[in-house]
Amino acid sequence: MTRRSPQPADELDALASVVQRLAVLLTAGVPPTSAWGYLADAGPDADPSRDGAATVSLVAATAQEGGQVQGAIMSALDHAGGDTARSSGGWRGLAAAWSVATDAGAPLASTLDEFASALRDLAQTEREVQVALAGPVATAKMVMALPAIGVLFGAALGFDTVGTLFGTPIGFFCLLVGSALMCAARIWNRRLLASASRGDATPGLVLDLVAIAVSGGASTERAVRAVDRACEASGIPASDDRRVVDDVLGLSRRAGVPAAVLLRSEAEEARRRSRSNGARRAATLSVTLMLPLGLCILPAFMLLGVAPLMVAVISSTVANF
Image (tube, rainbow, N blue to C red; front, side, top):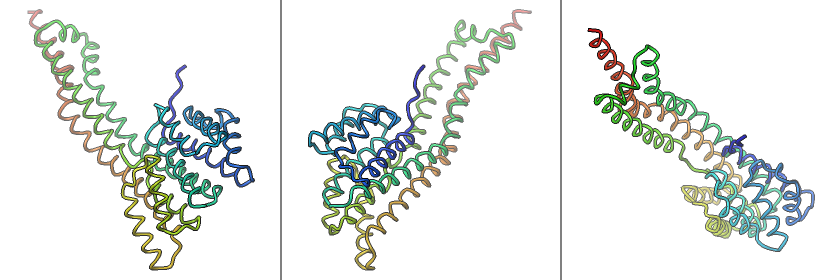
């Protein structure tokens, strides 16, 4: 029986569980090296994602040999070919968070606890976007079946529509053009769905990382430099968060408000915007899917389902005379 591949939201939740367990172990006084080892000894049930379990094992082995956790995570991601953008972004975020906390002197336990909460927010965002896209995706799959339904309907009425398509010149012409239109509709639908599903894999992550750095007592300049180095080493794009970080740090200095609180608030707002943008993309997709339906699928339905039926009806009528 084929095992269903885990969804991005499930992988993010699995990673959040790993991070939460690390936080609990560190809070209890377990050294970081031993904490990773305990997680690896727990087996694959500690993480439903196969690639996640392999990553934990590799990090544990590297940590026990005195290597860097960030480098071990990145090495594991390079060898894992099936990671989705979301789950891969989560692991990269963990590598950057570990590096930032170590560099800035922030307590690892509380850092990981906060990062686990951020990962659960990302998983919830991913689920809400996928739920919003479920309707348009189902519609696209359903309308793709219209031409086949037309052919089967003609056969059910007793007409040789399949023979007409393959055995007559006009039927073969309809088959070629209709098949080309179906291929075009399939490619078009896939591009529309991919465009609607595309979004920031880790919204607000850079803001969370800077909040971790400043919570360790580092100056804002040192915190930003530490985050920039960690993001570059982990392959995390700064996107628009870098500009927001500068704005928030400036507001913190002017108002005398702790920067970490403002940064985490902005990170939560970034995730809310991501959910809203996903819902808007899904609503737009419901409309744009009408284009391949009207321009490709319905003409293909006429060519593959209706035209052969009409030819078969006319042929049988002429034959009776």
